[in-house]
Length: 169
Image 1 (cartoon, rainbow, N blue to C red):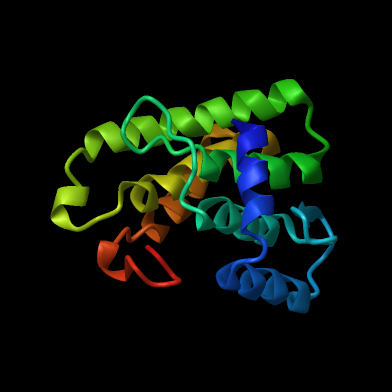
Image 2: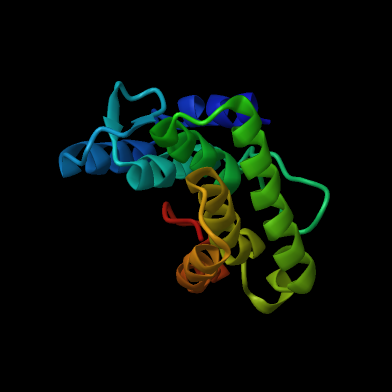
């Protein structure tokens, strides 16, 4: 799934939205912590995760897990960026991705039917999955993870009103 996700990132680079995001991250001039896939430069881990996740979704061909809301992009893009920053092992990468996907699955099952009410499920669960993934790789304590999720979960508004635009959802 990770190789597929990276393939989608590379495939999306010529798209207009991808060029906008890559140029935005490059112009920030942030600390070179993590790579923006296929772009030839590094930026902060947070910006790399954001841009890479956006690239992975730009072609709309992403992989989904078995439970509602278990799109693999938020955990994988986060694990690539934070894992690179932390020098994480493959085992730590996989453990963090699995924890992030599990978090998304639990939130997704709790929110079944959200799409019928005008909300995009992945936008609702992705920040939580990314937060758990990053928290595992950063070695957050239970209290720190609670704070992480307290910041991450309100970030996803999940409105489907942007469908059909370059911003998508």
